[in-house]
Image (cartoon, rainbow, N blue to C red; front, side, top):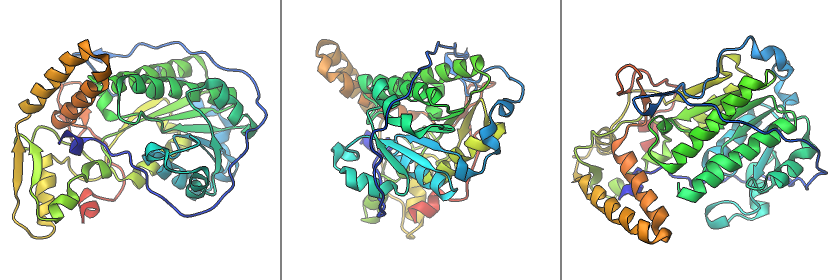
Length: 386
């Protein structure tokens, strides 16, 4: 049941054609990084935690910002991920040459062949590489110099403990190191607003990388970054649309008012990410972002789903303490049987999203704030449900 509250990572598909790029001859150098300390208040990491001290006119050291899009090459890692695909399409729509980095077999359980991946991402230049291998990634990208900017949309498949550190931290760090080695002057990192209150492994992994990114920019005047922290995606809120349409009740924890979010349309998020590349005002900043309209609780969303077809609302209210009991048992077993480590973490993820809002945490009040969560775009969740 908790799965209904988790973000969906299923990709969508397109039907176009291109030719995958072969592995080019490697070129050199890497850039070691050191950590920067995050700013904490009351045990929670605030939205500004990865922001480095102000520096004079970062754009002055970045001539790529004066170039037209057609002359600005952007690398996207995680290009076949759910948001990555939208980002690739938006950058192509704006006229950028795009180098799309993905695994040789992408999609759920690697179901997409190379030919299907190339077709889906056309006319981007597709590079098949292993982002967990820094040498391979650098070699595979080295034929595309100069690279002007990178958008990193990597995310662990489900939030498992080891997978979170392997992908959300180390593979993302490999992307940064390869990017700087090949001339990238700006790095856009797709993080998540929930890292403000880090209780899960993937949140800690993303925060550690945010610190690395800020430290790199503080040392390197020719380098800037943007950390994008979206609230929730439309698709992640749509897990019960079909079941309600079939006449079933809407399932929610407690009274449905535990948490709220301002979900953002995937296309709008991709547009915001693309804006970060050229907008100097977004440089060296952590940028929480939500969709248009007021924050919605699960109760609000359930009522919306019944209102659209003109039906009387029907709800099943599940006590959240049921999840607490299950997590307690699995967590205890995981201490004896390490193979259950991920099962325990998945339970904690479900519990987190059942009770924590995905809004900006107000540093003054310690409460989640609808008003302090920026809005972007035009599409609404009600339009998506309809």
